[in-house]
Image (cartoon, rainbow, N blue to C red; front, side, top):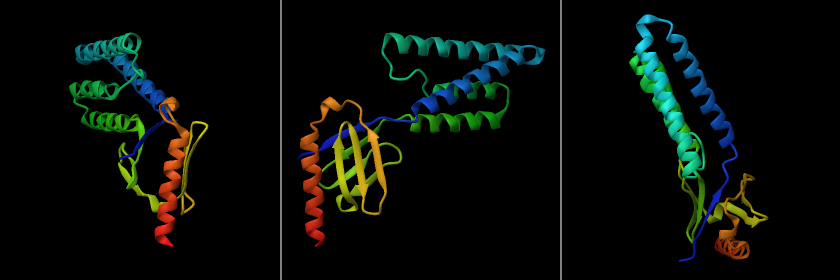
Length: 184
């Protein structure tokens, strides 16, 4: 069964990483400020150490193991657990939710083109029938999904050398032409 898997670049990843960095720095500053209050000193010091260890671990993973991004969802989960120590449950819940949103937003955006349909596999998963498209083209490392309802998805693909553009375009055109013939 012929099928193509195409991963497109997440154009918003840099913005999400900036948000994660701002979150980390803001929590670090707040925990540093709380060091000046005697009743919070131990928890604040533990929180700063936890954040410091997290940054060192991520730096090691990023440099030595060639991770694709510096931050992961724990940039939100670790401060959330620290706020649990301060008994600030609202902040803890907000940071946990932000961590899950960060995890979902940083997933690779992958499309699987099969004989039956086109599936976007990351969260939220979507399946599109071929009869919804007026055109599907891969040209100059840009994937274009043109829907019949005038919706358009265009994105640069990762690892363009893994996909033969001509084979993909022939496959997509055959599926679109087949669906048009069935509807006629």
